[in-house]
Image 1: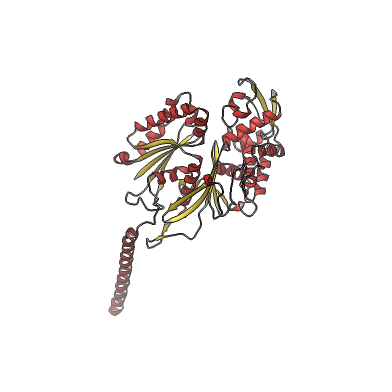
Image 2: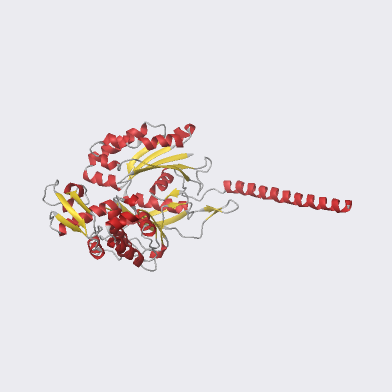
Length: 460
């Protein structure tokens, strides 16, 4: 059996094709990633002025899915599209445009011979919880088969999940502590086990929106002069930007100056790590809190506990630090030190180190500093808990993100109750029969060899 999910993110869309044995829909650990395709062009929210183009943009990947899924399976293959923070922002700014984009996308998806199940905008909480389900499902933290085929509840605890997209960031983890804000509480029942999960999605705290908001703060600080220094950009990097490219988002709209949006401002990098950290910290509100514990912006968060997996831009940022900058990241001080080193590295040096990353290269200083502040001052990871974060892109051969958890939920492939033992008993019988066959065969071979040797010795 196959399933297809289109992950319509703020900066791009990715298509995932999943595969599992036809008779094992309620088993665990059997779903694998069969194929993946990155859609050319920007995210679907960028097509607000030309909605039909949003649908057309998906055709190349959908045509790939036609080849990846056997033709006789097309009709029974569920096809979903889930849109995340980019479309959540468009829905805030222009609900009619958002609806038009979703309609155009749905119209394209319906032309394919798959079982189209809908195109929808996920809430931030759904995105967070589905990412958590994906990670823990792939790592067999919910349930697994024993070596005789019986279902067993693993003794290990679930992992927390941290996602860092283009327009939002999510943190989700199981907790025994009281969850003071009911909007952050999700009760799940999976395989007969109850899970109390904390989740929160921070809109406007994704990578691309953070960079826009940072630019807005810098222009504000310099009173929108024609030339503005950027402490997070490397020395030697200069760029001119239209105000319209900064204030075209609900995340920055409130700070829009009383200037023509076609005004151009020239920015030049100064590579000042301390000043960069100061400006990035102003993106958070660390003071407001009406609960016993808060992360930032007055959001309740219980104390982080256990192991975490951090994916998407969390992984790409730390991977850059480790592979390009040659720095290891074990403690918060390692992350801060690496961010400061990136900030102090000139544009020409950075280009020499990573010429293929030219487009994103100027922003690694700011993004690394943001990840440091988000994890330490925001989520309150310290020297004891920070080493429990694994920065990963995949679990085995399957990408970690919300897409698999979304599909598992909507195809009811994770039952609420513990799976029936009927299959396990049959499986056990087969295992025992195979073992008996192997043992009998080995004993027969040993007996035959002994008889052969005895006959040879008697012949001598």
